[in-house]
Image (cartoon, rainbow, N blue to C red; front, side, top):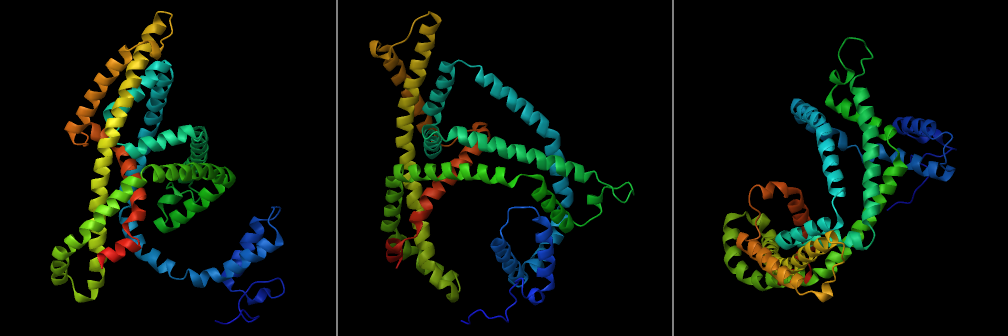
Length: 384
């Protein structure tokens, strides 16, 4: 390696002519954009150095973008149709969504907890990781912060949306056609990106994302601790079955795959074995979670129903003085657990469509938890 010398194109106040034309233009833009701001001279110099090096570092991006742009241009009519359809449906989505939230907030406390118990009792085995993640957010007082963060982000989205709508209607040349319709999609993307950066508040966005990320780290930490045995079991099953699967799969794959790719075969077999092992482990965990959540949800439903009945009579329900809540709770729990087992933990139509976002979130959480166990030193030895 060679040390940095004065001959390198580093932008300083003493040698402004050493910079490239691109860096000089960028410096002028940066200087004009930060006048009156709180950027220190040292930070400015660091930015100038990075901007001077950026053109050579990013020289491969422009050809790549130029190759992709023709395909995006072909998809432009479809994208425009999708955006217009969403714009038409957006008011109704938010109107009926807000109506549902208002109706939900009007429910008595016993009804809200009863609905939560019903979901636990009949769907707890489908979403073990998602349920624990939601409970972690509530117990660590992260829910209110996350809700406010998403509210702030939505406020910034509305500002951006208003700016985009105004930009889409501009006709500066006066030919009766909007300016965005007369430029290429590449220029339109750059135009929208520039409009995005000047229309939203970066401090609000950074603060909101920081809150969400902090809560997310806490949730992931709790999930890893609680499901460590499940992931370890899956990894152990994968390690045990790797040699058995390899004896059958490796000779076949060696015949089908060119020799230059043979080094990838043991790793692929190991990953496949561990994926099967983790899938089996999560299936076992689903049964355990279904039993636990069914009992818990059944008791919540029974106690909330009896509590509401006593409330209507002007009395207070005390679960310690009654055995009826346990009798009803166990009955509901048996029913909920039986329904989940009979379904094979596979949601039927139309529930599979209704719960598709939750199912996707559950799969994603399970993948994040299992990903770290797919490859490690012990697994590599087993694959060999």
